[in-house]
Length: 285
Length: 260
Image (cartoon, rainbow over all chains, first blue to last red; front, side, top):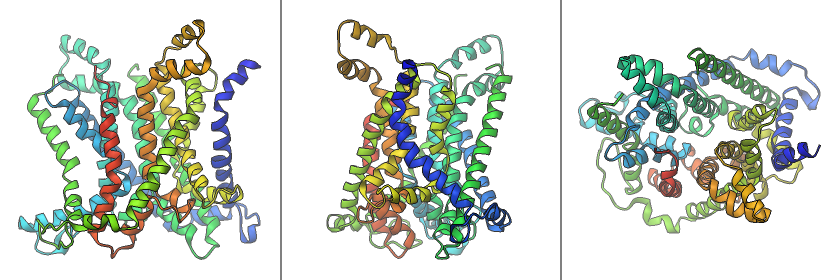
């Protein structure tokens, strides 16, 4: 009995905080998603309304697309960066700092930096004009505020690939080098060593940080609020606007959307965990 | 697989260009008042820097953000310390589920709970005041800190504490002079990540916080989303927003990557 208490005691502050300020709010949101006019119980009606809404599906699929592509590209770039950084070479300290520095740029600032750089009247557009590639502002492609999510993906990839890269680097500098040398001694070629030795050894840690990156780009509010398109809304912006709508009747539907997107996100994460875990097992890790 | 030095230089140069060059227009915008397409190099005249000290929004918001995020950082570390130690050092049934639960607030979009928080915080007297804003931030950074710190404690040798206790050192002294120094680098890294997280959040400050207690994102977000504000003002505010975190990162950069 005493042992059990000594195990639980350190978690008390956490339990109280999360119970009152996270679980209770979450329950409030779920409750809200089942309420109708005047707070009466509405059953599944809000859900069926949301599930039949074109805007909801459009926004959900758009956000999934943007965050999946951002994560996959970030991961590929991260592995390349980590491979380039892992040995000792002159200037490594500087290279490491350059790879770390943009952890310090809040997403809000990263979004605005990209507006300065990529908007139709931005810096790149001016450079393109100087180089004779475009004649007028309209010739420059829509890279921010665009409905394909290009601006969002650029911000997320820019912000996240060094972050994954550093966590992959931590692993690459560890044990895998030994196996690799053994494989090299046995005459295994470069490409095969990459696929069968290096990749499997970085996947577990890359998987954890890429889940975090996926979740943060999926649920982000600040970046799409600044450089998203009014025609294609990310889920966070869509739910914010729905909730804030002067027509208060929209609130229960907004709550249903919050529950549904959270469930979608959890489903993607659990599937992904399954896949990477079974992939790692197959390779004998 | 020793990487060819030329290929490495090429990759690192490309990465450095991709990471650093986007800052150029930001820096230039902060120092000009007038810059129109398609001019590549504008006339520098000091831009909004000259007016920063008299701007009544940016510097007070900087002070507020520092107060908030420093408090969030230290409270997150304090509230997560013993839980993280238990999680890292001891083995018990249900350890994995606890670790997964700790990730939930980081995974689920903030927007999905923040309006529930608003309703509950109103009932608890935590709405639209500093205590509420602080609590709202802690909800996201205490579990996060617990998880990061527990990984630090997994490599921690508990027998050090036992030795100190055998030598008659008290509990508090053991914690302060044995445990804390042994995990110091991990604590600093965790603290920096909490600080950066709290520093970046706009949504909580907007929905839960006191509108009179403006933080930097609270000043910057309306500047950039409402339009017809000068890019120069935005650029200066943005640099003020980035610099403190950059300084912290520069001071602690040796801690993030283990070098053999």
